Image 1 (cartoon, one colour):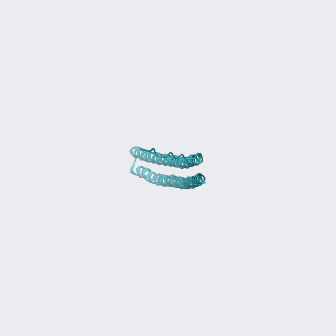
Image 2 (cartoon, one colour):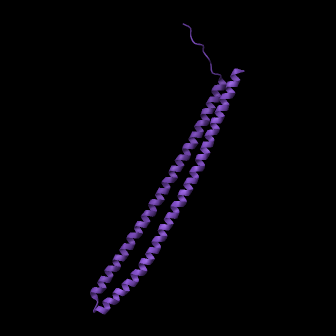
Image 3 (cartoon, rainbow, N blue to C red):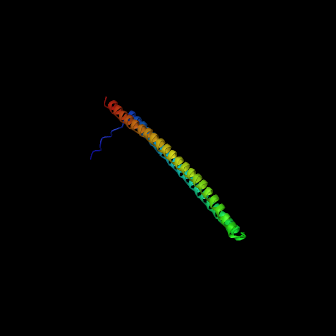
Length: 162
């Protein structure tokens, strides 16, 4: 039984192949880096949204507490009223002050919500733009590495046949 012929891969071809693998690894590392940065940015966006939700919730509780305290204050005034006319006066003052307070609260709450939505939208837009740009760059690097690897292999093949 004869042994198969021993074909040796030329050193130049091995060097070119090694460079090609290194270039492909760098392109992949760049792509993974871009993906990780995007994930970190998205996580930051989620944190901003969570903070905004906490602010809105906290403000809602403050408003509720203010309104309930105003109602208790009214009840106390009504109990201390000397006659129906004084009670009606306290009731009218309460309605006027609560109407103004609720308008102010609604305006402030609306501003907080609008600001939170704008921040979220701006952050999402920035994340998407950065992600798209980094992904595009990583893809270009990968394509360049593949092209270079093809050229390297072809060059090595040409040299080994000559």
